[in-house]
Length: 292
Ligand SMILES: NC(=O)C1=CN([C@@H]2O[C@H](COP(=O)(O)OP(=O)(O)OC[C@H]3O[C@@H](n4cnc5c(N)ncnc54)[C@H](O)[C@@H]3O)[C@@H](O)[C@H]2O)C=CC1
Ligand SMILES: O=C([O-])CC(=O)C(=O)O
Image (cartoon, rainbow, N blue to C red; front, top):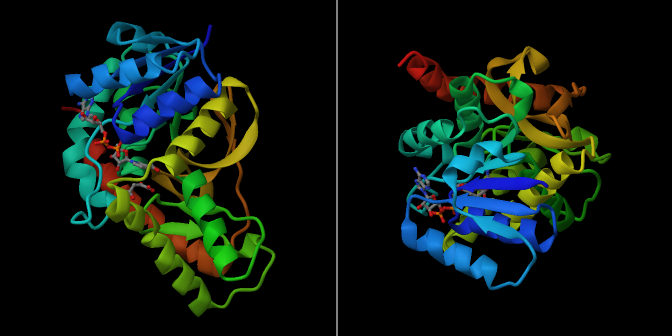
């Protein structure tokens, strides 16, 4: 029997639970939310689908799940400029999440923003093998990159590494098409604002994240061993450490099976270094707290 635990069943966590059920990815879903009315509503709504999946709210059972999704906490509103601005609000939620994860030996997927720092923070607080902590966001950024490439009349493989945020790094060199620096910067600037347009229009991003989180869960549970852009705790890869950052990672049943080190062009390399420096600064906040 495979089971999925989701902490935080608001917009993204709730939709992820629904998709995991509808796609038949798991036999059981264990959900928890600090806000009882949303928890109850999501459980009922899932049960009313009639899908043959167990739905439980037993928090003690969350540590026995195969995959645990951390989607609890504060989301952005149009007033909150960057995902990094959510660190203060969501650090205590990450701490609370790590308590639910005591003794957990499956794979954790961090969604809550600022996702890279929270993934690093959970890894630090759990004290587990870094390969079991996957940060989600790169697949979504890459899908958005593909949309912008299409809009610009270009196509080709769309990969985004770096931070899930202002310091994202679209890999123009992998598209197979030439892009000048100013065109790159124009597209990058539009990509930085992509999710805010959705947040303004409908309160938050839902379909994009939930679909790609489901694909990540599938990659783990089906041991697909496919390479996906995921945030991984780095120990020297891309010349970076002391942070979790989006890199191409092979994903399977045990989590991150390996990190691929791709050749980047000078523009991408510089952006990656900036991303590492920025996210390391956020992650340090968890290092400072680790002895507390
Ligand atoms: N990594 C990514 O690509 C994406 C990340 N996000 C992030 O995911 C998080 C959730 O976003 P939404 O679902 O839109 O927010 P939401 O507000 O709809 O849901 C968050 C849920 O977390 C619950 N919660 C808060 N503190 C909790 C705690 N200590 N324990 C249990 N539950 C708690 C709330 O009651 C709420 O139901 C946000 O931080 C958002 O920025 C959202 C979309 C994509
Ligand atoms: O932009 C946000 O705050 C939510 C998010 O991470 C995304 O949709 O990529």
